[in-house]
Length: 376
Ligand code: SF4
Ligand code: SF4
Ligand code: SF4
Image (cartoon, rainbow, N blue to C red; front, side, top):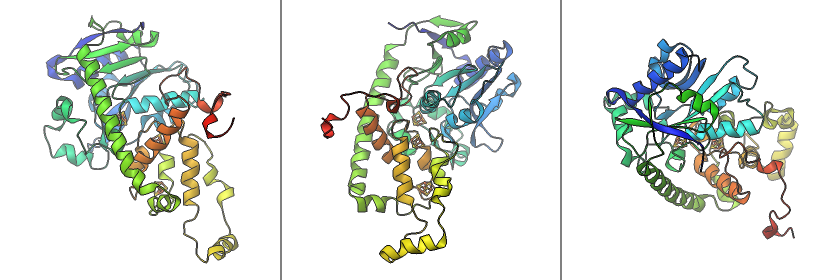
């Protein structure tokens, strides 16, 4: 039995986006929130994020926007590392963004005192690059995206990570806005898990109800199909990466630009080891390294970078795949990180971002850990 408070919110004029904007405007007017960070369209029509503090400026906010330019947790990390005294900022986040925020809270990078975590269902997103044109060329794009709910699982145009994402509903939240597995022309399902979330539900006209069975079934089936797709993708990738030589080949096009690291929401070190003097080599050191084999690949140390990053990230990776979307040579990072993080997290019986209470695996010690690899 949970003590969630939940119910249906009636959708006005078959327009869930506008209905939610009205709800957000109410929260700002009633000073329940001093600002809200939410997915939005830029004036050029591209996917972005907006921190809105004036109810009249909510028009560009699209709560169900199916494109992701950045994992919003990176922005939250930038702006919410300090106290934020006197502010109450609502964060409208997709499940993978919310999970990254939860990890960053546990890594002591974000303070939640001034934040309200508002999760929203997400069946998948498109890459930000090209999204403006995709939407411009199809006048019915938004409508089709929200209503063709049976087509999400087979949508091969979603970002790679989304095609493997089984968490369409947020896992941890103060308030969750549900629209999958129901008719979003008619109603949305709002569910508050904490006092902060319940505070936002006050004054809303909700018809109190538990989560409908149809929605639960939809989400279960969605997760099952995505898990199946993930297994297939990983099997395909395994054929390419098994063995050191194949792994090196997988990363052969890497430019060592470190974009994948810079955009990763849970790659949080303020000073990265790879940007430190330790990795600065003089010419004579490069030549000495080259002499050992007669040839060195330049830029150097790319495999060391990837293997170290994987090692650092695997227990906190939320499989958002924004690393792959930011890679100029489209290396298949989303599938690789999905595999590595899934395996590592399963070993620790952990899921990154599932709960604020679950301790980080590397901060805890269990005597019976890893006996099967010969530590008895
Ligand atoms: S990874 Fe999951 S939660 Fe994140 S954008 Fe894709 S489908 Fe949505
Ligand atoms: S490693 Fe990639 S998939 Fe994992 S959290 Fe970072 S950006 Fe997301
Ligand atoms: S973003 Fe791509 S090219 Fe740049 S370091 Fe990462 S894998 Fe290499």
